[in-house]
Image (cartoon, rainbow, N blue to C red; front, side, top):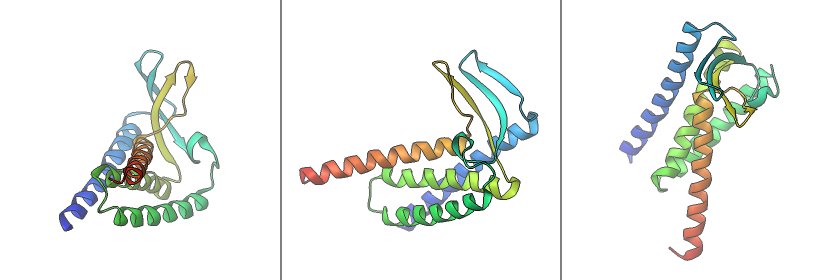
Length: 159
């Protein structure tokens, strides 16, 4: 049990570190608004600052984000604690969500904005620019949904 917790904490720390190192690399090597084309017409690295949430909604509402993030971290921590008997992918979903949440929370506390840089144009839609923490959050939510569906199916089958 202790080993599982240690692995999960190490996972959260590694995800946080990977997110922060990627943002540091962007801020140290690019000027704000600068864009580097990686895949023509599909993927750029573009340095922007986001003072809101996804799609820049609620821009500049830092106190709101602090409160929501603290509540989310408490809930995610509790759910991770409760998931210790769940399959690995259930626990991994919470590790990813906590790591991603901490990455963006740290930015908001230290900079009053979040560093975003992953810039995709998908089938002509210029997708909002995001970062690794956002990616961890989305993958974590997807894994949580898959875990929930699989658990629900197995209970209905009596497995």
